[in-house]
Image (tube, rainbow, N blue to C red):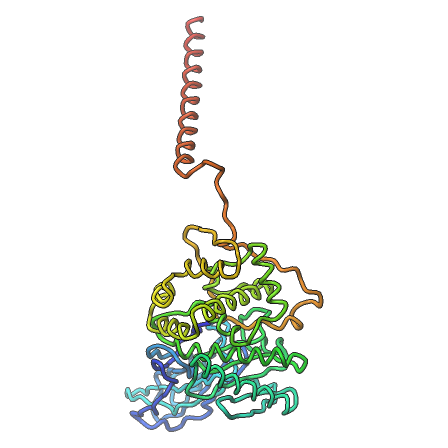
Length: 452
């Protein structure tokens, strides 16, 4: 899942805490210091300043409250006309930087300098990055702030209670916990949710943002059972994100998503059937291929989730739940997944795949040179429920080519060395033929001249 491509001001391991700015001169004459949201595309910061002395420099500093590494300040330099009275504004384009999750807290302040070289800083201000077209309501308690706008209170209360129970179960079963409440935004449909955030696959049904303690899901009353599973799924992402947060390591997607699906319970019937078909047809994706982002094609994405679940189930049932926590902690402390697996389980990624394939009765792993994972996605969304995303008839499962399923064997008995020798021999033969042709041509020319 994964940091956005925006410059932010944050402190290591803690939610952003910004001290009140210190003024060289009082920020008098500041009016219309505001932010206008054009959700979900952009936010425009605007300010008007009057001063007894000409203002020669204006800078905007802004960011988002979230977990991150180090301290980085985002600065913008708006265009304006210097003078004693100025008006300045600057627009943060989400289409360029990457979208923020609904409910994220954006902060900003302005620095300006007058002709005497004196600097002033305006008071820090914040705004919630959230659409205004929905009439949001909130139920809070037990570590969950559930926000919704469609459906009765009983609908929202049921989802809130399920989320709170999920937090309790995740703490008891896996030792996963967070120190502050998680904001859960329930959209009326998956389409509404997808329209609230940019650059996500069309099959997205839910998204987790561990850095901001935010989860968004599209749930209709008819899909409330799926919605409850999705809540647990996304909450798992948030808690795993907190446990593994560091500037040193990374969690492969199969581990993150596998834990999230495993926390939901058993696989749904369709997903289980698709997994079994992939095992039978030997079209499973390799574990290495599942380390990056999943495909945007629904069937391929669903199989990726199911395989990840199967891998986690194998690890937990074979080696116990405790080792999963040790594995996550090792990744947090900067170990690669290869080293972490070796330390905890005494096998690397390929060894994991070999053991897992043997346990589920799949064909042995195909050995390939330099396997690479799929391109990493910004976030890994939750798959929309089958009833909402797919036709009424269950589609035939299929797999797409990966390095684990596709290989082009050489002809029998032909090695890389013999292939090289064959090519060299062919080139030598071509050279000899060319020389013979040139020699014959010269011979004919000389003979013809002698005849004359």
